[in-house]
Image 1 (cartoon, helix red, strand yellow):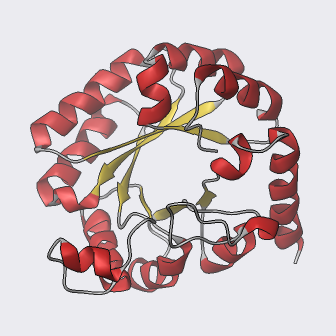
Image 2 (cartoon, rainbow, N blue to C red):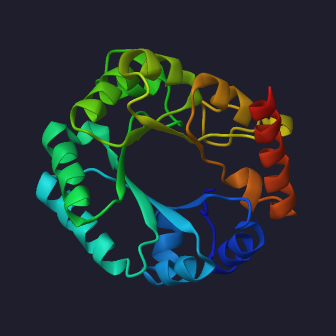
Image 3 (tube, helix red, strand yellow):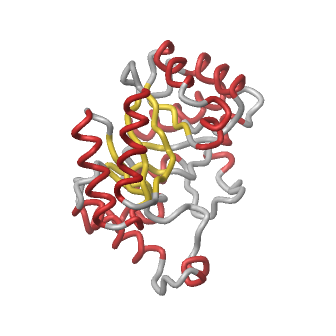
Length: 232
């Protein structure tokens, strides 16, 4: 679950849903408001955290950032972190090596953001389809031994065909079945069942939950859909 919200709401959501949610995603929105003290809260709640900072810099800078975050994590609640695969081979390889040297934190390569379409890629000089770009970046993530990738459900078939099951696939842009057309700024979205059918390992749901009148109730709807899919 993505917690791109304020501290008080984030706390309430975690406390009310921790029995149903496996991992909470923390990105710049919440981290800028809360900082590393957030890790102590998550540790007290006995849940895991996925730090989604999408690092994209020279290898040394990315490695030092990873080192700093892991050093802050006194209780070992950080499950994974994200880096941009477009940062290149050396950056990815160094990030993975640093994380493994310091423990068991997983490194996930972000492929193409769910807010982008072909025309957006063309505007930054990438003259290939979203699927082709995701395939290329997923192959790079595999080559550098990343634990997985972050990609929309729309490109999972391409990733699985090119990389098999060697990469874990984290899928953002998940919308509740009854709200599948609400995209906000994300363009390539999917329902939980569609993403699972396509080969997702982890689903990321954010605004459908933290903007709901009753977040726990919304989590129950989503988990119900997932359980129904698992039975079929």
